[in-house]
Each structure stands twice: as C-alpha cells, then as structure tokens.
Image (tube, rainbow, N blue to C red; front, side, top):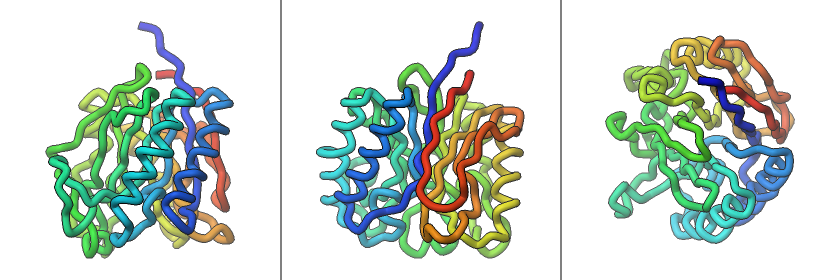
Length: 255
C-alpha cells in the first residue's frame, strides 16, 4: 500500500500573560501554518494555561471553546494543544490538574486527550499523574497518531524522574500510531540537549514512528535544550528549528 503524505507543523511558542492572550497567539500561529498547508499541528507542553497548577479552569475552558475550537474548524486542522486540566474523565474537578494534551479535530471537535504519564518529581508536587492504562491513539484527518508530553517520551534519569519508564513511544507504536506529536517544556539547562536529542532519535527508531515536536519558549534569550522539529522512523532528523525564540515549521512527511 503506497504511503500517504501529511503536512505537519510545530509551534515553538511562549505562554502569554493571560490564557485568552495565549489562545489568540495560538490562533495566529495556526492561521500561518494552515496557509502553508499544515493539517496536523502540535504546540508545547502546558502552553495555554502556563506550567503550574494555579490556572483558572473556567478561563481555560472558555479559551478552548470560544477561541481555539472555532479556529480549528475554520482552518480545517487537527491541533495537539498543551493545556492543564483540573477535570477528570467524568468531568469532575480535582484538587490538582493533569498535565494534558487536548486534541482538537478539523471540525472543532475534541478528538481525544493525553494526560502526562511520567511527570517529573517536581511536577508531582502540583499535578496528577495520568494512568498509563488510559493511553490511546487518535485518528484525525486520516492519520493515526499518539501524543507524548516531555518526560513521557525520554524519562530523564537521575533526580528528575521518580516513576518507572513505561517506554510510551514504543507502546504507542504498538498501538498503531504512525506519528507521535511530542509537546515539550524542557527549559534551558544545556547539559540535557544531547540526551533529549538522541533519545528522540532512538525511540523514533524503536517505535517505528515519526516524531513531530514543539518546545516551550521559557526565556527567548537562551537556547532550548530539546529541539522542536521532525525525526523520521529511521532516527534521522528531517528538520530542527532554531533553539532560540518563537519559531514554527511546516513540513511534509510520508506515512
């Protein structure tokens, strides 16, 4: 069966002062990449709400409902959006949020969610761990894909990680994912750059998937320590965005 082509995009972005301002910035970026043909887009980890556990759930919900979902429908794109969520699967509010990726389809519908399964020790002080048994793949726009969130993917050894490595990329590959959209907020400690980069290469090979990543801009003056870009199933980078400042890329892959 011949491969299909998909146009994917990554948004290397910073969180704005308010959730609404961030949502509007996401929409502007979505418009830019959609104009270049992108159909599947990934944002950084916790982009919409900020990387913390004291955001407003109501503002988060309103931004997704009134700003971001209509934009996905307008531009006909599938968006993997980094956003915390205090609601569990039953819709009940929790004391601590999930670190979550919300997947919004081209009709503006919620296609699925992924809750970070391997939060760092620091994350666990304010977030709830996603249950690995709830991990699933999504199908949208004809593409079968999975989502990972930062330490989900590479499980940094040492003091950062207190949970076992479930090798989520390989698990998603076994579930049939052809692409993993990887949302990152890894910071600027440059000693991790080589580890993050090579881990993305190695796990793309083992999972036999494309990896499409987007990192969060914490300090625009400092380089990030994990690339936003695309790794093929052979572990070869097809594109790496500059490590400093806000960037976006649009590339075609064959799946």
